[in-house]
Length: 339
Length: 233
Image (cartoon, rainbow over all chains, first blue to last red; front, side, top):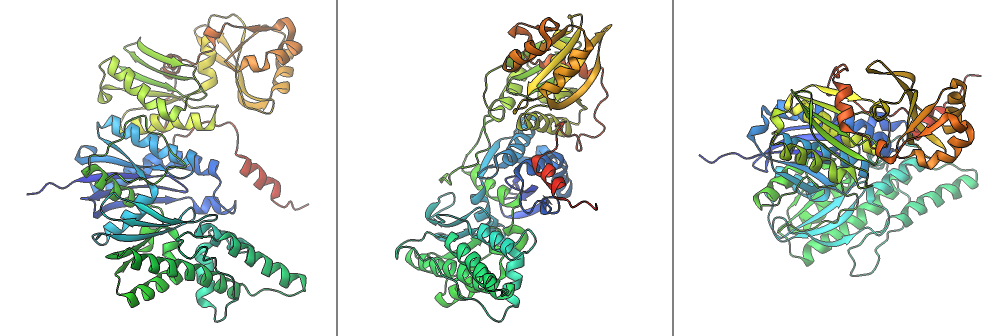
C-alpha cells in the first residue's frame, strides 16, 4: 500500500494566523484559521504591529488545533511548510520562527513557501492542475497573471503597476463609508444595484498584461467630490456597481486574452478578490464561451489559509526543496520557480 | 535537569544551556544582525555542541521583554513553540531584570536600561538583597528625564547597565554627577544564563499558549484610537 504523506502548513503573512494538515498535497485533513478582522476593524485596516502581537498570541494554539483535528502527531508529518514571504515582515516572522522551532524540536524538514504559490496551489485541493495553466491572482496585496508549464514553474506575464485590485476595493469602500474589510461590501452593493456609473478602464499598452487601478480609484474619489460640491449626494450602490464593472472588465478581458495566447488547458483564480461574486461570474461566462475550463476555489480557500501553503509545500517537498534554520521572513520575496 | 535559555529582546543575542545547575554553554553576540536569521541557528548550535537533543530539554526560559518589539517576539515565539511541542514548562523573565543580574556584585542600586527612541527608555531599578534581586522600581517605558529625576531623589550610587547606556551617558552624568556609575562594556551583554538563573526561582507560565511578551507599552494605533474616542463631556 502506498504511504500517505502529511504536510503541516503555517501561514501568518497578514492578519490571519493559520495552520493546516494536508494529505498527499490534495486533501485537507484540517485547516484552522484565526482571523484578526474583529480586532483590526476598529482601526479601519490592518495595523502591522497589532497583527504581529495577535499572531504571537495565537500561533501555538492554532498549530495544536490543526494537529488535533487531523489526529496527527508530529512524527506522522513529512515536513513543515511555512509562508516565507511576501507579506508584513513582523507578521511573517512569527510563522517562520514557530515553523523553525517546530521543525527543530521534531526533527522535520522545513520548507519556505511563497504566499502566491500557495494561493495558486489552493486549486490543487479541489481539482488536479493541468498544464499549461493560467493563474489570475487577485488579493489585497496582489494582482498577477502567471503562466505555469509544469508544477513549480511560474512565469509572471502581468502584474499591477500601482494598487492591487483588493487594495482599490478597500480604498473605494472607505470613500463610500463602508466598514472594513470593504471588498465584500462593495461586491454586495454592486450586485444589488440596477444602475452603474461609468468609470474609466485602464487597458495600458495593447500587448500588456499589466494592470493599473489607482486611476480608477481617483476617478471614484473625484466623482464623489464633484457631486458633493454641487450639493448632491452619491448613490453608493451605483458607484460600487460602476467601480466593480470597471475592475472586473479589465481582469476578465486580460485573463481571456492571455488564456488564448498561451493556449492553456485551464484557468484558475486565486486570492481574496477571487471570492468576489461579480468577478467569478464574469470569468466563468467569458471562459465558458471560449471553451476553456475555469476553476476557482471555494471562498475559504481564496482568502488566506494554511492548507494552500501545505499544498504548495507538498509539491516542493516532492521536488526536494528544503530550507534551513537561517530562513527569514521576506516581505518582498519574488515568485521564483522551483522546477 | 536541562534548561535552554533564550534572550533576543534587544539587538544582542544570547542562548545558553544549563544542566543540573551548571552552565554548559552560552553564546552571546552584540552584533546587530537580524534575530530571525540567527536565533534558531544559535539554539541548534548550542544543542549540537553539547550533544543535547531537543527532546532532552526539560525547561525553557525566555527573556519576555521589554525591548525591541520584533526581537522580543522572535524569542518568545521560538520559546513557546518549543515548550508547547516538547511538552515542557516555559518560564518568562524580565529582560531588564536579567540584565540587572550582571551587576549582582555591585553594592547599590542597579539600573538596567534599553533605549526606546525619542529620549525614552525601558528601564527599572533593582538591588541585591542577600542572594536575590529585588525590584525597587518596576519595569517601565518612560522618558529618560523622568527616570533620572526619580533616581536623583534616591540619593544612592546607581550602576547603569546595558549597551544603550552610552547613548545617554552625557544626560545621565549631567543630571546625577557622581551618583551615576558606569560599568565596562563586558557587563553590558545580556546573558541567557541569567535568564535561566532567574527562571529557576520564578513561577512557570500558567499556559504556554497564552504566554505573550511584556511590551510595557501599547501600540501607537491604540493610543490614537483612545484619543479619537469622543468623551461625554
